[in-house]
Amino acid sequence: MLVVWIVAGLVVLAVLGSVLFGLAGSLRRLGGELSALEREVEPVRTQAQQTAARAAAVRDRSARGG
Image 1 (cartoon, one colour):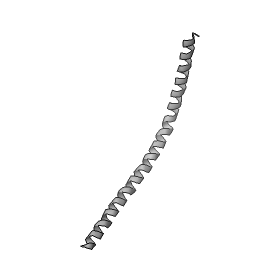
Image 2 (cartoon, rainbow, N blue to C red):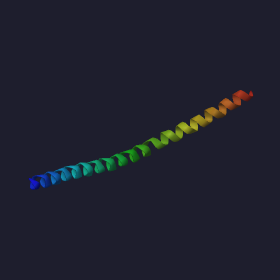
Image 3 (cartoon, rainbow, N blue to C red):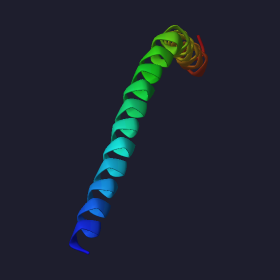
Image 4 (tube, one colour):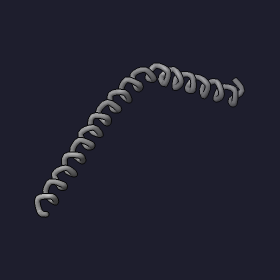
């Protein structure tokens, strides 16, 4: 009976190891995808910030009456 418990424990460890290995690979791929997305979005974010700064400058000039 002890042999059955040892084998069951080894099977459980093997399954958990494979799940963790797959999860680590998925997280690594997700990190790469997020980095790529960040590179693609950066120009749009910069443009939005510049537009917001220009809008704030125009709003400030209008508030001062100039």
